[in-house]
Image (cartoon, rainbow, N blue to C red):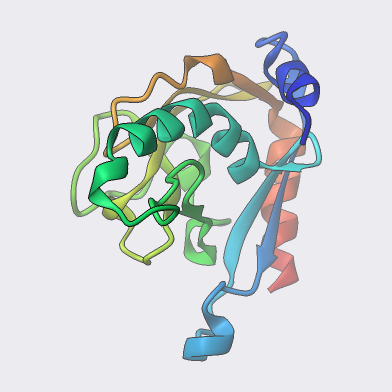
Length: 177
């Protein structure tokens, strides 16, 4: 994805965006026989995890450079966007994505919702958190943060969605299962 395209995606922080929740096979389904699908999220037809990766990339690259001595040449992990979609259990009829997040065993800051979990399957290991504000007309995601790094993700701005379109997509994803 080009930098110009990403800049466009983050500009106009208050413009209405489209969202699509899709149930997809769990990434480890082939290896572990995991039958529970996960909720992939697309914002403006782009995978949400990719948008997060672009926002985190400068911080992950700086950390990788700073810690390069800890790894053999060329093998330092690049952590930007290293998330996995949440289980379908977080979808409709759960209110997790509608301002009433599921309680997380490891806490999190009050009023936050986990949007993405760690690729290792332990959500608290590496999670993307945000605040979800719901009005009769809109659903807004704001204050994005990684629970393990103090990276400034404010460049992402706020993601404002039409509540009717948002809820239709959540329900539709449930019907896919």
